[in-house]
Structure formats: C-alpha cells, structure tokens
Amino acid sequence: MVSLLMTTIEFFRQFRFGEYAIFDLTVSFLGIYLFSPLLSKIFRKFRVDMPKRGWLLLTLPISILVHLLTGNLTPMTKNFIDMHGHYVLKILIIGLAILGIRGAKITKRT
Image 1: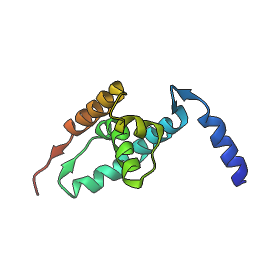
Image 2: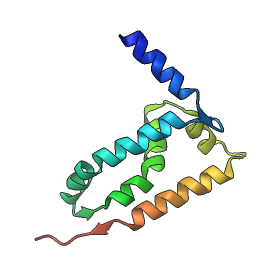
Image 3: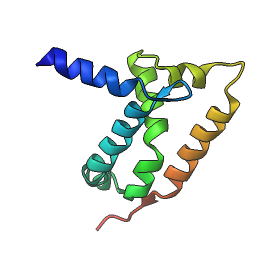
C-alpha cells in the first residue's frame, strides 16, 4: 500500500513548471486553503486578523521559511537563497510576502 502511494506521488511529481513540481505547489496551496480558518483563529488570539486571501498569498514565502528552518532545501528554496541569480523568483516571493502581510490587521482588545 505504501509503495503504491509513493509510486503515485512520484508519478504526479514528474509534471513540472520549470524545475518546480506542480503537485507540490498544488498541495501547498490546497493545504493553506484548508487550514486558513484554523490559522486565522489562532492569529486572532494574538490580535491579528488575517483573511484567507492573505494566507494564500503567504503560501510560498511561508514554505520557503519552513524549508530553511528545517534544513530541507528544495529547488525553490535553493534558488531563493542563491546570491547570483533567480531574481524573478526573489521578487515574486518578496512581493507575495508584502501583499500577504498587507491584508493583516491588528485588532483592538475587547
């Protein structure tokens, strides 16, 4: 059963956009979409109101940060920290981070 699952995942990961697996990107966005209500609820306890759109925009910046913190260097993470290129990716990730954070609002205590 596990072997079949791994073979299926490997099959889906062969479809790529450049050097990035479309399956990985899709699963990341789907995961954030499904967990965004929970994440928003947790952040409301810290007086931060974050809409679902903000979480979706922050998906790639968060994934790069998590991969850096865990030491799991994916192709996108490697390209982002590469000092000698991949400027379009860097601009995209920083732009997504700015747009995602821009949607957040600090709320007053009630």
